[in-house]
Amino acid sequence: EIVLTQSPGTLSLSPGERATLTCRASQNVNSNYLAWYQQKPGQAPRLLFYGASTRATGIPDRFSGSGSGTDFSLTISRLEPEDFAVYYCQQYGGSPGHAFGGGTKVEIK
Amino acid sequence: QVQLQESGPGLVKPSGTLSLTCTVSGDSISRGYYWGWIRQPPGKGLEWIGSVYHSGATYYKSSLKSRVTISLDTSKNQFSLKVTSVTASDTAVYYCVRDDGYSDFWGRGTLVTVSS
Image (cartoon, rainbow over all chains, first blue to last red; front, side, top):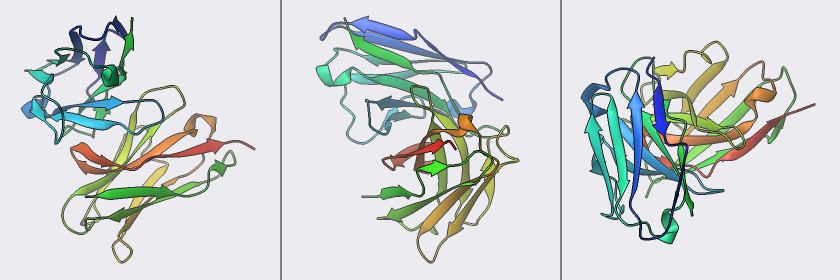
């Protein structure tokens, strides 16, 4: 079973700054079946990326996803006030099912 | 636009059975996707529980497999979750999702508390 480790646990940044979040898998993620989600307090998560780097519908281009194999990253080029949230990575397509990382909280410095 | 809505009791007694239903609109659950459940304990991260294919085939998280059943009701365009022998650690917000590997559509979630 694949284990996903996200770092850092918390990222303290100011609006306008660049954020880089990482997700490391304990073994190779087949076909880059890696997704990223954003979750704000009291809301369901929202899909940002699938296939490691394919942006979901309506996601602004200041968000980018990259990586392959065991190392993946989510970058927000310039943080907007609405980007402060918790971000999760998820592996899918493996056996016996899906797995989520523990999350990274992006907070206002 | 696909919409999902969870429903079911918000309070379940320890050792009892948690039962939730997800009603889908804007898509037919018979069409070809998986439909799944994900939960989130208060203040914690996301945990995938399991999914059901339009054919009725299921797959579950290994650590929950002995207690979980997910099923379809195509006549009502609904799918359901049952978790038996619940304990306080099953207290969580439960989300139903359209599962295309990744989850592109989510319900709003429903809080289920396990307590006597």
